[in-house]
Image (cartoon, rainbow, N blue to C red):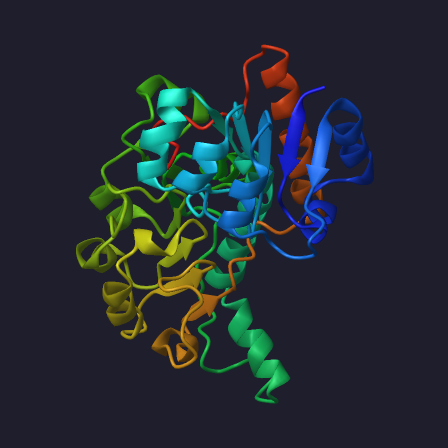
Length: 337
């Protein structure tokens, strides 16, 4: 039996694994679990990793340091039972150990992608229709219809939608947009082949054209060196008055200083599930702006998608040790760097 070190807490495992999937994991592999009742430190992982063929990590797992890999004499695969692996693998560690040793690294972004895409569509509707302002107005006892909210609001029906980044989430959003009678879907993704764009029924354009033509812009690009502050003051000023900007990806993709200046004009509507920094300071001006909706990085929540993480984690281990292709393997570009 292959030996697996599973370092997430019981709380995390109960969250992402169904009882059936967790029992299968125990039955198919020799698994050592975290029984500390808290997240391990990097030093504790380094002390335990020797002799294990596989490592399962998750939200709350510590960075995998040089010491961890120096002691990982048999490690062949790391399965991150969450989304981005940035918190646990630094670029230096990847270059010094992961790539030279050919260690397989995989995660479960597709599981979370379903939920993030659902949330994105919900935000498109909620923000464009100004529903939050009506909800708050009724709760605070103003008139039945808040007179400050215009009646002529943006509708998805007939609108041009801009998708920045045709990632797993981006593709799910495109799929979910199909019944909404949108006018056109524009995308910006330099890595998307033309033939793939044609299959998806979208039009590839420059980032500038996407921002100038779209009524609703939704960001789904990964955070990399090239996407850091990719969206800046120049792009934000291209948005038409009343346009909607949604970010459920990573906060640092947008220059937040430029975003704040544009939001303070009141001419655009913004929904942020991710921010920079995160969480936002209690005195952040973003918190008081009526045209900005902020949620605390919860777009990926949802029972069905979350339990899929456990299924994908188990399948990655099964496929790898059976010599099959691992579906959610992180390649050199997706590995964040």
